[in-house]
Image (cartoon, rainbow, N blue to C red; front, side):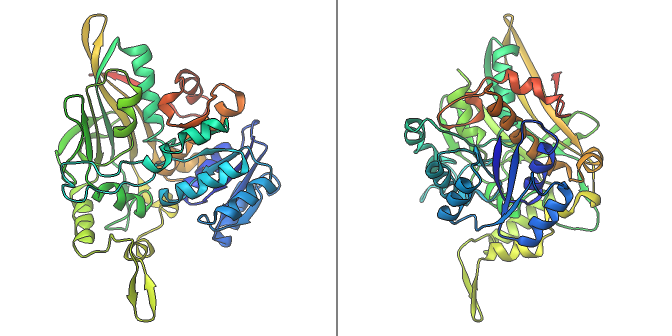
Length: 402
């Protein structure tokens, strides 16, 4: 397989490193607007012929199309901001190649009742092109990271093998990661952090459908396995709320909760209060700058945190339903230890945890184990071959009866 990887940040570097030793990978073109970063990642990979570099602006659909055609790639892997998803999808469609990303196009809150009603849902701008992609016989696999992504695979696997009927799915994303020397240091893109944490979170019930709540609502303590212990989780907007009700038959309730910590939430609230979460440019002297870009510039780069981080990251699904005519409740999850991720790949835990899923998906698309056309989430595919490969990629999962 030949891949055009757009974006070589923390997760992009992780994707390249996880794919590096795989026989199915012929070429992975590293593309980014930052030449120094491209050169640094290429040097770490140690094989410039297999990992050529290309300077490109990820918002330039024409340039991306030309790059994909020039290198005769099979897939464009989007590892940049979800704000550019549709432009990069258009490039893949024009080039006649597959597309994959790890997060869907952002929402737009309801104009009058943002904390009650859903406005424009996550991924709407991408799903609207489903027929166009299907007509061309091409696949756009969207939301194929860790969560969303592996979380969807877990949901389908549980539905298929572990339950006769799934009633509730609650995604739990938490851990005990600490970062030495920083009072505020996101473990993934600050843009994504602000977007998903400050937008009105969505909850789904079969009775009410999709509805929204206040950010950081419904706090709970959830006891994570593998020595992590109880962590405070709150409601956060996420793609699973959009896709699970369509692909997990009969599910009556879906939620997504993330562990942020009180101090972290206080910082995000303050950023919103003074307008530093805005993406709209403001004039500062003779230049215009996005306030969110300023925040990104003064917060630590997640790609540089591996040696400053300790602890574990865990993503799992608390699933309730019935099996063999009895109630069943279990937690299916994956835990990544920062010490292991740093030792194996020189990456911090969250970056590696997000990167492995897309690479396994590439493997399955290359082998033909996964096939499809249109704009589809991972829940649309057979989970069995993905689950079978997780051990091969040293990305083990576990199932805990609750």
